[in-house]
Length: 488
Image (cartoon, rainbow, N blue to C red; front, side, top):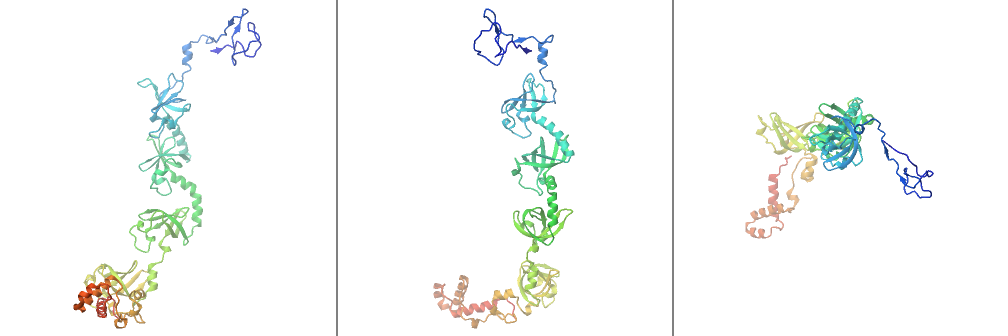
Protein backbone atom coordinates (compact mmCIF):
# COMPACT_ATOMS: atom_id res chain seq x y z
CA UNK A 1 0.00 0.00 0.00
CA UNK A 2 1.23 3.51 -0.81
CA UNK A 3 0.35 7.16 -0.08
CA UNK A 4 -0.77 9.53 -2.85
CA UNK A 5 1.38 12.61 -3.40
CA UNK A 6 -1.47 14.97 -4.47
CA UNK A 7 0.23 18.19 -3.49
CA UNK A 8 3.27 19.62 -1.78
CA UNK A 9 3.26 22.49 0.77
CA UNK A 10 5.09 25.53 -0.55
CA UNK A 11 4.43 24.59 -4.20
CA UNK A 12 2.60 27.05 -6.51
CA UNK A 13 -1.17 26.98 -6.08
CA UNK A 14 -2.99 24.64 -8.44
CA UNK A 15 -6.37 25.11 -10.03
CA UNK A 16 -9.08 25.39 -7.43
CA UNK A 17 -6.79 26.60 -4.65
CA UNK A 18 -7.62 29.89 -3.00
CA UNK A 19 -4.81 32.40 -3.68
CA UNK A 20 -3.40 34.30 -0.70
CA UNK A 21 -4.60 31.88 1.97
CA UNK A 22 -2.28 30.87 4.84
CA UNK A 23 -1.48 27.18 5.16
CA UNK A 24 -2.74 25.83 8.47
CA UNK A 25 -0.96 22.49 8.13
CA UNK A 26 2.49 21.64 6.87
CA UNK A 27 4.72 18.66 6.29
CA UNK A 28 2.38 16.71 4.05
CA UNK A 29 0.24 16.95 0.88
CA UNK A 30 -3.19 18.63 1.01
CA UNK A 31 -6.44 18.30 -0.98
CA UNK A 32 -7.55 20.61 -3.88
CA UNK A 33 -10.47 22.90 -4.73
CA UNK A 34 -12.62 22.79 -7.90
CA UNK A 35 -13.64 25.83 -10.01
CA UNK A 36 -16.63 26.43 -7.78
CA UNK A 37 -14.39 26.55 -4.72
CA UNK A 38 -15.48 23.23 -3.35
CA UNK A 39 -12.80 21.25 -1.47
CA UNK A 40 -11.81 17.98 -3.05
CA UNK A 41 -9.99 15.70 -0.52
CA UNK A 42 -6.93 13.93 -1.73
CA UNK A 43 -7.01 10.19 -2.13
CA UNK A 44 -5.44 8.73 1.02
CA UNK A 45 -5.04 5.05 0.00
CA UNK A 46 -4.99 3.26 -3.22
CA UNK A 47 -5.34 -0.50 -3.69
CA UNK A 48 -1.88 -1.39 -4.94
CA UNK A 49 -1.94 -5.08 -3.87
CA UNK A 50 -2.86 -6.14 -7.35
CA UNK A 51 -4.12 -9.73 -7.33
CA UNK A 52 -2.79 -10.43 -3.80
CA UNK A 53 -5.14 -11.15 -0.88
CA UNK A 54 -4.99 -8.74 2.08
CA UNK A 55 -4.94 -11.54 4.72
CA UNK A 56 -2.03 -13.20 2.96
CA UNK A 57 -0.15 -9.91 2.93
CA UNK A 58 -0.78 -9.46 6.68
CA UNK A 59 0.38 -13.01 7.47
CA UNK A 60 3.57 -12.33 5.54
CA UNK A 61 4.52 -9.68 8.12
CA UNK A 62 4.43 -12.22 11.02
CA UNK A 63 7.71 -14.05 11.86
CA UNK A 64 7.89 -17.81 11.70
CA UNK A 65 9.70 -19.93 14.31
CA UNK A 66 9.57 -23.25 16.17
CA UNK A 67 10.16 -24.38 19.76
CA UNK A 68 13.86 -24.13 20.62
CA UNK A 69 14.53 -21.29 18.15
CA UNK A 70 16.16 -18.05 19.28
CA UNK A 71 14.16 -14.92 18.44
CA UNK A 72 14.76 -11.20 18.98
CA UNK A 73 12.33 -8.56 20.15
CA UNK A 74 11.68 -5.40 22.16
CA UNK A 75 10.68 -5.25 25.82
CA UNK A 76 7.19 -3.69 25.96
CA UNK A 77 6.14 -4.39 29.56
CA UNK A 78 7.86 -5.29 32.85
CA UNK A 79 5.97 -6.84 35.77
CA UNK A 80 7.35 -8.33 38.98
CA UNK A 81 6.64 -11.87 37.75
CA UNK A 82 7.18 -11.58 33.99
CA UNK A 83 8.34 -9.51 31.03
CA UNK A 84 6.47 -9.08 27.73
CA UNK A 85 8.53 -9.15 24.54
CA UNK A 86 7.31 -8.02 21.10
CA UNK A 87 8.95 -10.25 18.51
CA UNK A 88 6.54 -9.39 15.63
CA UNK A 89 4.26 -12.33 16.39
CA UNK A 90 0.46 -12.12 16.58
CA UNK A 91 0.87 -11.73 20.36
CA UNK A 92 3.65 -10.69 22.69
CA UNK A 93 5.90 -13.37 24.15
CA UNK A 94 6.02 -13.92 27.92
CA UNK A 95 9.35 -14.31 29.76
CA UNK A 96 8.73 -15.58 33.34
CA UNK A 97 11.03 -13.88 35.90
CA UNK A 98 12.79 -17.20 36.59
CA UNK A 99 13.78 -17.33 32.90
CA UNK A 100 15.32 -13.86 32.83
CA UNK A 101 18.71 -14.62 34.36
CA UNK A 102 20.95 -17.40 35.61
CA UNK A 103 20.91 -15.60 38.95
CA UNK A 104 18.34 -16.65 41.51
CA UNK A 105 15.52 -14.43 42.81
CA UNK A 106 16.24 -11.41 40.61
CA UNK A 107 14.15 -8.28 40.15
CA UNK A 108 13.11 -8.03 36.44
CA UNK A 109 13.78 -4.26 36.50
CA UNK A 110 17.43 -5.02 37.29
CA UNK A 111 17.76 -7.24 34.20
CA UNK A 112 15.89 -5.40 31.43
CA UNK A 113 14.40 -1.97 30.65
CA UNK A 114 11.51 -0.90 28.43
CA UNK A 115 12.57 -0.74 24.81
CA UNK A 116 15.57 -3.06 25.23
CA UNK A 117 16.25 -5.33 22.25
CA UNK A 118 17.03 -8.80 23.61
CA UNK A 119 17.24 -12.40 22.46
CA UNK A 120 15.07 -15.16 23.86
CA UNK A 121 14.68 -18.88 23.27
CA UNK A 122 11.20 -20.21 22.43
CA UNK A 123 10.13 -22.62 25.17
CA UNK A 124 6.52 -23.05 24.00
CA UNK A 125 4.94 -21.53 20.95
CA UNK A 126 1.58 -21.88 22.66
CA UNK A 127 0.98 -23.02 26.24
CA UNK A 128 -2.37 -24.05 27.78
CA UNK A 129 -3.38 -20.41 27.93
CA UNK A 130 -2.37 -19.81 24.32
CA UNK A 131 0.67 -17.74 25.30
CA UNK A 132 4.07 -17.68 23.65
CA UNK A 133 6.57 -18.58 26.43
CA UNK A 134 10.18 -17.44 26.04
CA UNK A 135 13.44 -17.65 28.03
CA UNK A 136 16.13 -15.00 28.00
CA UNK A 137 18.57 -16.98 30.14
CA UNK A 138 18.39 -20.05 27.89
CA UNK A 139 19.11 -17.99 24.82
CA UNK A 140 22.06 -16.50 26.68
CA UNK A 141 23.06 -20.01 27.74
CA UNK A 142 23.04 -21.31 24.13
CA UNK A 143 25.08 -18.38 22.88
CA UNK A 144 27.52 -18.70 25.80
CA UNK A 145 28.25 -22.40 25.23
CA UNK A 146 29.49 -21.77 21.73
CA UNK A 147 31.73 -18.93 22.92
CA UNK A 148 33.05 -20.84 25.94
CA UNK A 149 33.91 -23.92 23.90
CA UNK A 150 36.01 -21.75 21.59
CA UNK A 151 37.74 -20.09 24.57
CA UNK A 152 38.48 -23.49 26.10
CA UNK A 153 39.98 -24.79 22.85
CA UNK A 154 42.16 -21.66 22.60
CA UNK A 155 43.17 -21.96 26.29
CA UNK A 156 41.81 -18.47 26.79
CA UNK A 157 40.32 -16.68 29.80
CA UNK A 158 36.70 -15.98 30.75
CA UNK A 159 35.58 -13.01 32.81
CA UNK A 160 32.44 -12.41 34.85
CA UNK A 161 31.00 -11.31 38.20
CA UNK A 162 30.74 -13.62 41.20
CA UNK A 163 27.01 -13.99 41.83
CA UNK A 164 26.77 -16.58 44.58
CA UNK A 165 28.58 -18.51 47.31
CA UNK A 166 27.78 -22.23 47.30
CA UNK A 167 29.12 -25.23 49.16
CA UNK A 168 32.76 -25.62 48.22
CA UNK A 169 33.18 -22.49 46.13
CA UNK A 170 31.70 -19.67 44.05
CA UNK A 171 29.34 -19.29 41.08
CA UNK A 172 30.60 -16.96 38.34
CA UNK A 173 28.31 -15.50 35.67
CA UNK A 174 30.07 -16.18 32.35
CA UNK A 175 26.84 -16.35 30.35
CA UNK A 176 26.07 -19.50 32.27
CA UNK A 177 26.84 -20.69 35.80
CA UNK A 178 30.55 -21.43 36.10
CA UNK A 179 31.73 -23.16 39.29
CA UNK A 180 34.94 -21.88 40.88
CA UNK A 181 36.17 -24.21 43.70
CA UNK A 182 37.38 -22.49 46.87
CA UNK A 183 40.80 -24.10 46.50
CA UNK A 184 41.22 -22.44 43.08
CA UNK A 185 40.16 -18.88 43.96
CA UNK A 186 43.65 -17.70 44.96
CA UNK A 187 47.19 -19.06 44.91
CA UNK A 188 46.48 -20.31 48.42
CA UNK A 189 43.18 -21.56 49.84
CA UNK A 190 40.74 -18.88 50.94
CA UNK A 191 38.59 -19.44 54.03
CA UNK A 192 36.14 -16.53 53.64
CA UNK A 193 34.40 -16.42 50.23
CA UNK A 194 31.60 -13.90 50.83
CA UNK A 195 33.78 -10.82 50.07
CA UNK A 196 34.17 -12.07 46.47
CA UNK A 197 30.43 -11.71 45.69
CA UNK A 198 29.96 -8.87 43.21
CA UNK A 199 33.62 -8.83 42.15
CA UNK A 200 34.43 -9.34 38.48
CA UNK A 201 37.16 -11.96 38.13
CA UNK A 202 39.10 -13.69 35.38
CA UNK A 203 39.63 -17.44 35.28
CA UNK A 204 40.75 -20.34 33.11
CA UNK A 205 38.34 -23.11 32.06
CA UNK A 206 39.64 -26.42 33.37
CA UNK A 207 36.59 -28.63 32.81
CA UNK A 208 33.72 -28.40 30.32
CA UNK A 209 30.84 -30.89 29.95
CA UNK A 210 27.81 -29.64 28.04
CA UNK A 211 25.80 -32.82 28.58
CA UNK A 212 26.07 -32.42 32.32
CA UNK A 213 25.87 -28.61 32.13
CA UNK A 214 29.15 -28.50 34.02
CA UNK A 215 31.78 -25.74 33.76
CA UNK A 216 34.66 -25.68 36.27
CA UNK A 217 36.90 -22.63 36.48
CA UNK A 218 40.28 -21.88 38.05
CA UNK A 219 41.33 -18.38 38.98
CA UNK A 220 44.51 -19.78 40.50
CA UNK A 221 45.56 -21.10 37.08
CA UNK A 222 45.07 -17.62 35.64
CA UNK A 223 47.03 -16.03 38.50
CA UNK A 224 49.85 -18.53 38.09
CA UNK A 225 50.02 -17.84 34.38
CA UNK A 226 50.02 -14.06 34.75
CA UNK A 227 52.51 -14.10 37.61
CA UNK A 228 54.86 -16.73 36.17
CA UNK A 229 57.35 -14.18 34.86
CA UNK A 230 57.27 -12.22 38.12
CA UNK A 231 57.72 -15.40 40.14
CA UNK A 232 60.70 -16.45 38.05
CA UNK A 233 62.42 -13.13 38.65
CA UNK A 234 61.55 -13.26 42.36
CA UNK A 235 62.97 -16.78 42.77
CA UNK A 236 66.20 -15.97 40.92
CA UNK A 237 66.84 -13.05 43.27
CA UNK A 238 66.10 -15.10 46.40
CA UNK A 239 69.23 -16.72 47.87
CA UNK A 240 69.55 -19.41 50.58
CA UNK A 241 70.86 -17.97 53.82
CA UNK A 242 69.34 -14.51 53.44
CA UNK A 243 66.69 -13.27 55.83
CA UNK A 244 63.36 -11.81 54.75
CA UNK A 245 60.35 -10.37 56.54
CA UNK A 246 56.92 -11.71 55.67
CA UNK A 247 53.37 -12.26 56.87
CA UNK A 248 51.92 -15.65 57.84
CA UNK A 249 49.27 -16.33 55.19
CA UNK A 250 48.01 -19.72 56.36
CA UNK A 251 48.68 -22.35 59.02
CA UNK A 252 48.42 -26.06 58.20
CA UNK A 253 49.19 -29.28 60.05
CA UNK A 254 52.66 -29.60 58.55
CA UNK A 255 53.77 -25.99 58.95
CA UNK A 256 52.98 -22.39 58.03
CA UNK A 257 53.03 -20.47 54.76
CA UNK A 258 54.59 -17.01 54.72
CA UNK A 259 53.90 -14.35 52.08
CA UNK A 260 57.28 -12.82 51.23
CA UNK A 261 55.77 -10.07 49.12
CA UNK A 262 55.78 -11.94 45.85
CA UNK A 263 55.43 -15.62 46.65
CA UNK A 264 54.61 -17.87 49.56
CA UNK A 265 57.29 -19.93 51.25
CA UNK A 266 56.79 -22.83 53.66
CA UNK A 267 58.12 -23.09 57.20
CA UNK A 268 57.99 -26.80 57.95
CA UNK A 269 56.83 -27.64 61.47
CA UNK A 270 60.37 -28.81 62.29
CA UNK A 271 61.70 -25.32 61.43
CA UNK A 272 59.22 -23.34 63.52
CA UNK A 273 60.97 -23.58 66.88
CA UNK A 274 63.91 -25.12 68.69
CA UNK A 275 61.35 -26.64 71.05
CA UNK A 276 59.00 -29.51 70.25
CA UNK A 277 55.89 -28.21 68.43
CA UNK A 278 52.62 -30.14 68.74
CA UNK A 279 50.87 -27.96 66.15
CA UNK A 280 52.09 -24.92 64.16
CA UNK A 281 49.20 -22.82 65.52
CA UNK A 282 50.88 -22.90 68.94
CA UNK A 283 53.79 -20.89 67.47
CA UNK A 284 52.32 -18.62 64.77
CA UNK A 285 48.92 -17.29 63.65
CA UNK A 286 47.61 -15.97 60.33
CA UNK A 287 48.58 -12.31 60.00
CA UNK A 288 51.71 -12.53 62.17
CA UNK A 289 54.70 -10.62 60.80
CA UNK A 290 57.81 -12.77 61.09
CA UNK A 291 61.47 -12.77 60.11
CA UNK A 292 62.55 -15.96 58.38
CA UNK A 293 65.70 -17.38 56.86
CA UNK A 294 65.67 -18.87 53.36
CA UNK A 295 66.79 -22.50 53.50
CA UNK A 296 66.26 -23.55 49.89
CA UNK A 297 64.87 -22.28 46.57
CA UNK A 298 63.60 -24.85 44.05
CA UNK A 299 63.39 -23.04 40.69
CA UNK A 300 61.84 -25.98 38.84
CA UNK A 301 59.03 -26.61 41.33
CA UNK A 302 58.87 -22.93 42.36
CA UNK A 303 59.08 -23.80 46.04
CA UNK A 304 60.69 -21.83 48.84
CA UNK A 305 61.73 -23.49 52.11
CA UNK A 306 61.97 -21.19 55.11
CA UNK A 307 63.04 -21.39 58.75
CA UNK A 308 61.81 -19.39 61.71
CA UNK A 309 64.04 -21.05 64.30
CA UNK A 310 67.17 -20.19 62.29
CA UNK A 311 66.52 -16.54 63.14
CA UNK A 312 66.32 -17.37 66.85
CA UNK A 313 69.05 -18.19 69.34
CA UNK A 314 69.76 -21.90 69.63
CA UNK A 315 68.96 -22.76 73.28
CA UNK A 316 71.37 -25.71 73.11
CA UNK A 317 74.17 -23.39 72.03
CA UNK A 318 73.23 -20.98 74.82
CA UNK A 319 73.31 -23.80 77.36
CA UNK A 320 76.69 -25.04 76.10
CA UNK A 321 78.11 -21.51 76.24
CA UNK A 322 76.94 -20.86 79.79
CA UNK A 323 77.63 -24.27 81.40
CA UNK A 324 80.63 -26.52 81.83
CA UNK A 325 81.17 -30.18 82.53
CA UNK A 326 81.34 -30.72 86.30
CA UNK A 327 78.85 -27.98 87.21
CA UNK A 328 75.74 -28.61 89.30
CA UNK A 329 72.36 -27.61 87.85
CA UNK A 330 68.82 -27.91 89.17
CA UNK A 331 66.34 -29.91 87.10
CA UNK A 332 63.00 -31.70 86.96
CA UNK A 333 62.43 -35.37 86.09
CA UNK A 334 60.34 -35.45 82.88
CA UNK A 335 60.34 -39.12 81.91
CA UNK A 336 61.53 -42.49 83.15
CA UNK A 337 62.91 -45.07 80.73
CA UNK A 338 64.47 -48.50 81.32
CA UNK A 339 67.99 -47.08 80.89
CA UNK A 340 67.56 -44.01 83.11
CA UNK A 341 65.67 -40.73 83.52
CA UNK A 342 65.35 -37.58 81.45
CA UNK A 343 65.80 -34.32 83.33
CA UNK A 344 64.82 -30.86 82.11
CA UNK A 345 67.67 -28.52 82.98
CA UNK A 346 66.68 -25.50 80.87
CA UNK A 347 63.93 -24.12 78.67
CA UNK A 348 63.51 -26.89 76.08
CA UNK A 349 66.76 -28.57 77.22
CA UNK A 350 66.72 -32.16 78.49
CA UNK A 351 69.60 -34.32 79.63
CA UNK A 352 69.80 -37.99 80.54
CA UNK A 353 70.78 -39.51 83.85
CA UNK A 354 71.90 -43.02 82.92
CA UNK A 355 70.77 -45.69 85.35
CA UNK A 356 74.40 -46.22 86.32
CA UNK A 357 74.59 -42.57 87.48
CA UNK A 358 71.47 -42.60 89.65
CA UNK A 359 72.97 -43.81 92.95
CA UNK A 360 76.14 -45.15 94.48
CA UNK A 361 74.40 -48.50 94.94
CA UNK A 362 73.10 -50.77 92.18
CA UNK A 363 69.78 -49.65 90.69
CA UNK A 364 67.54 -52.06 88.81
CA UNK A 365 64.82 -49.58 87.84
CA UNK A 366 64.88 -45.73 87.74
CA UNK A 367 61.65 -45.52 89.79
CA UNK A 368 63.58 -46.97 92.71
CA UNK A 369 65.40 -43.63 92.94
CA UNK A 370 63.28 -40.89 91.35
CA UNK A 371 59.71 -40.14 90.24
CA UNK A 372 58.40 -38.01 87.32
CA UNK A 373 58.01 -34.37 88.33
CA UNK A 374 60.60 -34.59 91.08
CA UNK A 375 63.08 -31.71 91.23
CA UNK A 376 66.69 -32.32 92.23
CA UNK A 377 70.31 -31.36 91.69
CA UNK A 378 72.32 -33.11 88.97
CA UNK A 379 75.90 -32.78 87.78
CA UNK A 380 76.81 -32.24 84.11
CA UNK A 381 79.22 -34.98 83.07
CA UNK A 382 79.16 -34.44 79.28
CA UNK A 383 77.82 -31.96 76.67
CA UNK A 384 77.58 -33.10 73.03
CA UNK A 385 76.25 -30.03 71.20
CA UNK A 386 76.40 -31.60 67.74
CA UNK A 387 74.26 -34.57 68.76
CA UNK A 388 72.13 -32.51 71.18
CA UNK A 389 72.98 -34.74 74.13
CA UNK A 390 73.71 -33.84 77.74
CA UNK A 391 74.78 -36.53 80.20
CA UNK A 392 73.89 -35.94 83.85
CA UNK A 393 74.58 -37.66 87.18
CA UNK A 394 72.59 -37.76 90.40
CA UNK A 395 75.15 -39.70 92.40
CA UNK A 396 77.99 -37.32 91.48
CA UNK A 397 75.81 -34.33 92.40
CA UNK A 398 75.55 -35.77 95.92
CA UNK A 399 79.33 -35.39 96.21
CA UNK A 400 78.98 -31.60 95.80
CA UNK A 401 80.89 -29.34 93.46
CA UNK A 402 80.66 -26.05 91.62
CA UNK A 403 77.13 -24.72 91.13
CA UNK A 404 76.34 -23.10 87.76
CA UNK A 405 76.28 -19.32 87.70
CA UNK A 406 72.52 -18.79 87.40
CA UNK A 407 71.92 -20.67 90.64
CA UNK A 408 74.60 -18.76 92.48
CA UNK A 409 72.72 -15.59 91.72
CA UNK A 410 69.43 -17.12 92.85
CA UNK A 411 70.83 -18.30 96.20
CA UNK A 412 73.14 -15.32 96.69
CA UNK A 413 76.86 -14.95 95.97
CA UNK A 414 77.55 -15.06 99.70
CA UNK A 415 76.60 -18.76 99.80
CA UNK A 416 79.55 -19.85 97.58
CA UNK A 417 83.31 -19.76 97.88
CA UNK A 418 85.69 -18.49 95.20
CA UNK A 419 85.57 -21.86 93.40
CA UNK A 420 81.75 -21.78 93.26
CA UNK A 421 81.28 -24.43 95.95
CA UNK A 422 78.26 -24.03 98.21
CA UNK A 423 79.18 -23.05 101.75
CA UNK A 424 75.75 -21.97 103.01
CA UNK A 425 74.68 -18.84 104.81
CA UNK A 426 76.60 -17.57 107.83
CA UNK A 427 73.68 -16.86 110.12
CA UNK A 428 75.87 -15.73 113.03
CA UNK A 429 77.49 -13.12 110.83
CA UNK A 430 74.22 -12.30 109.10
CA UNK A 431 72.70 -10.71 112.17
CA UNK A 432 69.06 -10.42 113.11
CA UNK A 433 66.38 -11.90 110.81
CA UNK A 434 63.93 -9.31 109.55
CA UNK A 435 60.75 -10.62 107.84
CA UNK A 436 60.37 -9.27 104.32
CA UNK A 437 56.92 -10.66 103.52
CA UNK A 438 53.65 -11.35 105.34
CA UNK A 439 54.31 -15.08 105.17
CA UNK A 440 57.78 -14.66 106.72
CA UNK A 441 56.29 -12.54 109.47
CA UNK A 442 53.68 -15.22 110.24
CA UNK A 443 56.35 -17.93 110.59
CA UNK A 444 58.50 -15.66 112.70
CA UNK A 445 55.56 -15.06 115.03
CA UNK A 446 54.90 -18.79 115.40
CA UNK A 447 58.51 -19.62 116.21
CA UNK A 448 58.60 -16.71 118.62
CA UNK A 449 55.54 -18.09 120.43
CA UNK A 450 57.14 -21.54 120.73
CA UNK A 451 60.35 -20.07 122.12
CA UNK A 452 58.49 -17.83 124.60
CA UNK A 453 55.16 -19.45 125.61
CA UNK A 454 54.57 -16.88 128.31
CA UNK A 455 54.55 -14.13 125.71
CA UNK A 456 52.33 -15.87 123.20
CA UNK A 457 49.38 -13.64 123.95
CA UNK A 458 51.43 -10.54 123.48
CA UNK A 459 52.86 -11.98 120.25
CA UNK A 460 49.36 -12.62 118.95
CA UNK A 461 48.38 -9.04 119.71
CA UNK A 462 51.33 -7.68 117.77
CA UNK A 463 51.60 -9.92 114.71
CA UNK A 464 53.05 -7.13 112.63
CA UNK A 465 55.87 -6.43 115.09
CA UNK A 466 59.43 -7.48 114.17
CA UNK A 467 60.40 -11.00 115.34
CA UNK A 468 62.75 -11.14 118.34
CA UNK A 469 66.35 -12.27 117.86
CA UNK A 470 65.63 -15.70 119.30
CA UNK A 471 62.78 -16.25 116.81
CA UNK A 472 65.01 -15.14 113.99
CA UNK A 473 67.60 -17.68 115.02
CA UNK A 474 64.91 -20.42 115.13
CA UNK A 475 63.73 -19.54 111.61
CA UNK A 476 67.29 -19.48 110.39
CA UNK A 477 67.93 -22.94 111.85
CA UNK A 478 64.75 -24.23 110.19
CA UNK A 479 65.92 -22.81 106.90
CA UNK A 480 69.19 -24.70 107.22
CA UNK A 481 67.30 -27.97 107.72
CA UNK A 482 65.01 -27.47 104.71
CA UNK A 483 67.68 -26.06 102.36
CA UNK A 484 67.84 -28.24 99.22
CA UNK A 485 71.17 -26.99 97.93
CA UNK A 486 73.94 -29.63 97.82
CA UNK A 487 76.74 -29.26 100.31
CA UNK A 488 80.34 -28.73 99.32
